Image (cartoon, rainbow, N blue to C red; front, side, top):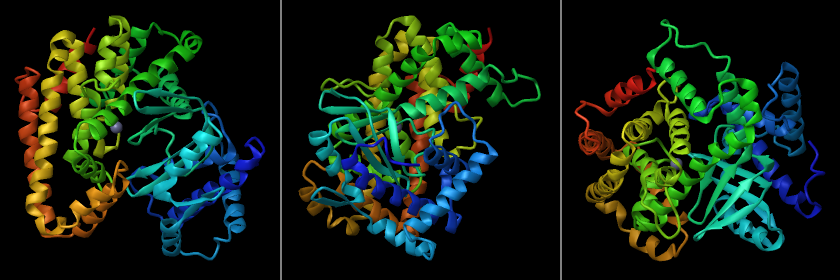
Length: 461
Ligand SMILES: [Zn+2]
């Protein structure tokens, strides 16, 4: 792919992002450790990127071949052919990026975004970690302000790392939210359009799948799209509807992680994601949805509840469908799925009453985040000597604190006390579940049971 469509003064930077992306891909390929993102997901996303394949076009055998050849030519161009996976790992960790006179490591790429904001507004650079994997998107699109947060809508992706999957619709930092139009279009073509060809709930299929199908049907019916041609006609309206709750989920993260929790606890939670989803990760995810409005920002459910009742129903069915991970292999999402689906289904059954319980659920989740942090500090006191210094040094940028926790978790990974702490977390989850159910007014014995009971009832007719 040529970089002709990118402004000339950004070509050099584009090449740096491309090089970094090829290094990452090469490392994944050589080590054959694709992790929980999955080989197919990574390959298809990077293939679409390098070949500039639009979301409505399937990847053909010829595409796959062209992709392989292109990767090989980049490997030669960047002289990576003799590097081992371990050498590449070191190179990726040490990678630096330069724009004009500013050179920064990967963790500080947001400083280059600040330069873009001043010098070439509309140019977007999103970077972060998904688990242990660095991810970066370089492109352009309009941006707007919500309170103190800048919302970037990425319309054109000039280059993205292979670790950015097609399904990743949004990302956030303390000061910015990124929405990917490419991912929304992908969702439209890979999830919602194929629905019209899906087999209806045959008895031989699992209950999880049948309900997943019925939920999509409810969402589309509520939107007034019963046939594919009608759905295509209303495509843009649907894309708008898809985008809004995703945006407010990210804004909810900002409310909780930069305006509610103290920085040491917010970053403790954020770093928990870097290794493996824990109970704390699930709590942060549901908190983004149920967050109370603050400083001009709103979380997902406050936003949805204020829409007119018909639109709110469409949003909720749509959101339920997105959080319905029960018929997928994404085991690590099930903890969050239980919490989100139980709230949405309770809302669909009794909107007013459920919404009134939102604040109590939020306090409950915050209380458990705090106690998880306190227990950790109690158990690992000797390891926390440096924390005070890091807090003093981190000013309003939490990146150093996240790094502090990530390094600490990594060093503790095989520690018997850490194992014990994680077991303690599981017992907390059980305790939390019981309280969550009682606030929702359910007599079910587990949240999962509540989800399936209500989902079956509401999709019956
Ligand atoms: Zn989230």
